[in-house]
Amino acid sequence: MIHASASKGIEKINYENSSYWSSRYTKAVRVNAEPDGASVSASHPVAVEALTHVGAPYVYGGEQPDGFDSSGFVQYVIQQVLDFDMPRTLSQQIGMGESVDREALQEGDILFFSKDGSTPSHAAVYAGRDQIVHPTLSSGVKVTAFEGSSYWSGNFMEARRITEAPKIAEDHDIVAEALKYLGVPYVFGGESPETGFDCSAFTRHVFEKARQIFLPRSTDQQWQVGEDVALADIQPGDVVFFSDTYREGISHNGIYVGDGQFIHASRSEQVTISYLSESYWQDKFTGVKRFDGLQIPKEHPVVSAATQFIGEVPYQSGGTTPEGFDTAGFVQYAFKQGAGISLPRYAGDQWNEGTEVSKEDLQPGDIVFFQGSYLNPSVYIGNGQVVHVTLSDGVRVTNMHTNSYWAPKYYGAKRIN
Image (cartoon, rainbow, N blue to C red; front, side, top):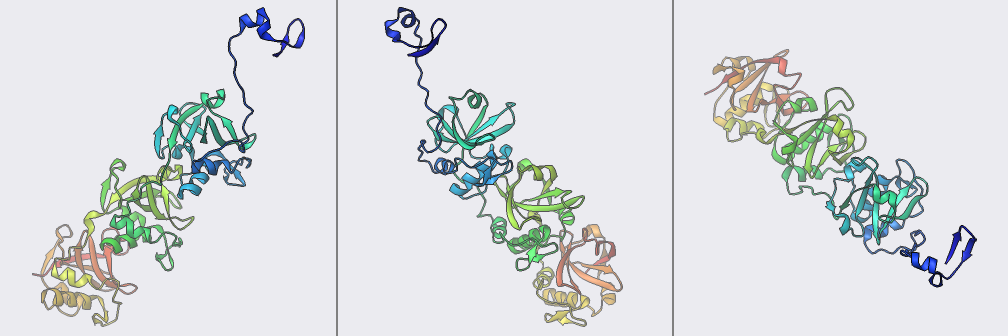
């Protein structure tokens, strides 16, 4: 052996022939040179992909091969191999997949490390044989030992095995409808897949197409209807709401699709899927609503007759047929076709028919009147909604409680027996 002795300095000796050194022998260890990536072989696709980026520089916030931080590196590798977008932050990534015991690590597992023992501060891809691949501040993406490093083994927090994308409830009718519009651009005020959506218009469109549920137009109005749901009880098809995004108060929403994800018209992007666990959405999260009970009760003959024209028939001054309606002509037609009842032609005369009922006692098929520059009748269809004719939209559904234009114009209601 070659060693430094106190009496002779650096010397080479045969320690087996030295009674002093042979009697003091304790053990031997073999130290291999730190691997550079090329000398590490792996077969798992995640580990293989990670090794191809050895040498890429460390860049704070980096998530592409021209520079990575650790969470960006894990996100990129998983996306390339498993073809889905992981969350961007370590605190979100550590909740993905399934937990793996330290003693049962396999190639492709993701290892998380913590400086304080509670918050993940670094991540790496396990490449097998005690080697991890990860970006370091000093050397960029490199291969280092795991258990063989006192630093990394001492700061180990948890390991996760990620084998597939989070589950999306693709068979759920509302979710399936929402997924059709992935990639549609965000347009403030947009209301169609052809021109683009804003968030509330997207939610409204999906519920109308999937279940013939007609939600109010804006996020704050949608927040006022439906059933409150605890986050712990959330189900696919529920709607998640957020506050103080681009303005104060309820200002954004999306449809929950399962496994901590929601689909929405993102103001910064397009119709996309995001994770509820992202710090931005956690900070803005307000609550969950379920709209299961808002279907139109079409078993009522007048309601059935009136709602068949939603979005199909325009306003027409003096109109009394499906080619075009004015406000009173529409109500007159719905009662005649649905129930065989002949109402007067004009709203003032219709108000003189039937029995007056309070707003609290409304039933589907009642006539609700609004007072603007003239009396405007509509057919009540339940759940605070009326179907009526407007100059701009023709036959449409309006929530009479949440719509800021129509709510203060409520005049009264009549029941025609």
